[in-house]
Length: 449
Image (cartoon, rainbow, N blue to C red):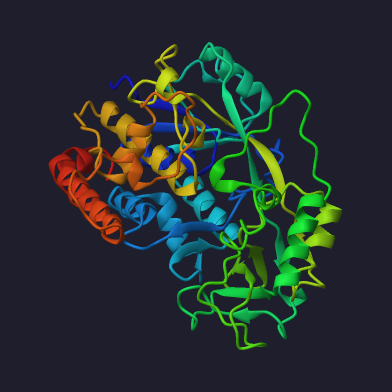
C-alpha cells in the first residue's frame, strides 16, 4: 500500500483541480475541500470550480512567448485547465481567452464525474483541522484569496508573517452599451482582426481621462495593511500617477492603429477584449482599478464610445496571499515545518492563471509518482516550468510573485541580437523540455498520463 493513497486538496481553483486530476490518473483517492458556495471570497461570485476572477485571458499563445512555451509544456503533461480553455475559448487574437462560465462549468463537470475525486463543499479554516487528520498528505491550493482564518494558520505554520500584495481587476461592460459609431474593430498588430474593440482618444481627451483617474476617489485600504501592488497588475490610476505619458506609452499605446473617423493615428487608445463567444460583454484591457464604483461610472464613460457604458462588473481590488517560498518550502513545495503539507498555485509565489495551473499540475505529477513509488526528475531549469520552479527556491532580498518569463531560466551564454533572443530562449526551452519528457516518459505514462 502506498504511503500516498488518500490526499486532501484545499481549494477548487486552477491549481487544485489540476493537482486533483493528475492524482486521480494515478489511482489516488482525492478529496477537494472547496468553501463555495458556503462562503465566497471578496472577489468570487460564481458557484463553479476554477472561477476566473481577473482577466478571462490565458495570455499569448505565440510559440516564442514564455507563457506560450509553458502552455505547450503543460499540454504535454495533459493539463485539464488547457483542455478546458481550448474547449471554451473566445476570439482574442494571438492570446488564449475563454468564456468564464463555460470554462468553470467544464472543469466542474470533469471533477464531479471523476470516480477518484470527492468534492466536499466546506471551508477549511486551519491546517490542523480535524477534517484533514486521516489524509496521507494535504495540498494547500487555496489561491491568493485564502480566507483570513486559513491564512493565519499558514502564517503560524511557516513561523513568520507571510507576505501579501494587492491585485486589481478590470471592469466588464455590456456590448450593446458601446457606441459603435465611435468604437472600431482591430488588433494592434493585425488591423483585420475583429477580436478587440478600440476606442480612440485625442490629446485633450487623453489628458482629461488621466487627470480624472488621478483625482478619482479610491476604495480605502484597511488601516492595518500596507498597500503593495504586484507590478504586473497595477491599478490604472496608480500607473497614471507615474507620469504624463505612462498610459499612452503603455496599455493605451496607439501603435498600429488608424482612427477611421479621422484617418490618422490616435493620440491614445483603449482596447476592449471580448468576454464570450457571442461578444455580448467586453473587458477594459489595462483598466484594472481600485476606484469606487460611482467613480468608475463617471470616469470610464469619459472614454469616447463608452459614454453610455453599462457595467456588468466593476473593477475592484483584493488582497493576495503568498509565502516566501525559498525560505518556507522544500524543493517539492512542501512546508519545511510540516512535510506532509504541500502548497500549489499562486500561494507559492507564482503569478497568473497559467503559472498557477502549471504549479498545481507539477505538484500533482510529483505526488502521483511518489504514490506509485516511481522516480521522477524535475524539469530542467532551461524549460519554462523548470524556470518557475527555480524561482520558488531562489532566495531574494524581497521575494515577489513572478509570471513565467525567460529571465527565470539560465542565461543563453551566447551573443545574440536583442530581437532574436526570445526565439532562442523559446527554442532552448522546447528542446530541454522535450529531452526531459522523453527521459521521464515511462514514469509519466506509468503514473499519471
